[in-house]
Length: 252
Image (cartoon, rainbow, N blue to C red; front, side, top):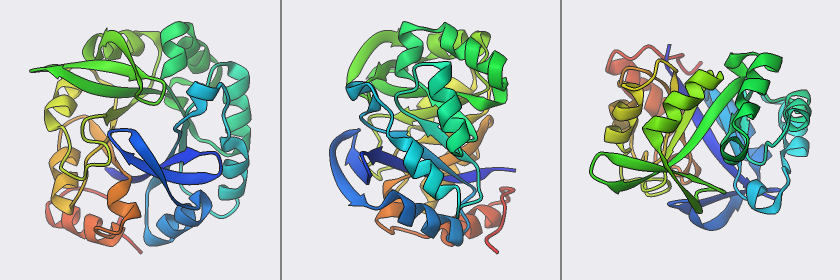
């Protein structure tokens, strides 16, 4: 069964959103939006601390502790995870799965350590991908600010071997634009791995969601701006996907 996730980018205590991971502006309260989306039938929430790697800290523990009291869907959490201690504190605060990007490039064994300690299903490889030429994308770190010189497909294959259990794939070029998802990128990654994918970046209408979620290997689509700015509702999405014969949990 496929899933719809709400992507919640966090800076401090605020829910924020930008375009192409830049020009971040405050949207509102993360807890209020989380409860709103939960009540509307969201399947899971993805929290990304947008500046944690830049400032060397993760500010999501208090937000998670508050959210998990009232929201009962899986929580995927990323940003600033550098150690097993960081993982443990986020899981204790209510996280179900942990998304790792920047730290994995300086310490790839962190993926293996996390998978061995908490299970592969708990460790999500977070990739911020930017297109650099036709049919080629580069991994970026530090909230999409720093190029790594590493090819996305090479990194996916490497991380799968290290023990990652899932991929959270963000197109930097499409993030926040609401102009449609980079289906070429999604297909390329899907064809290179057996890991399930959460695709993110660019959903501006229900059709955009369908075009990506129907791709083999995509288990979920994460949506930020389209939901935050009320371009459509979760009910709209799920009814459209159901009409298109996509198996998804209905809105009750």
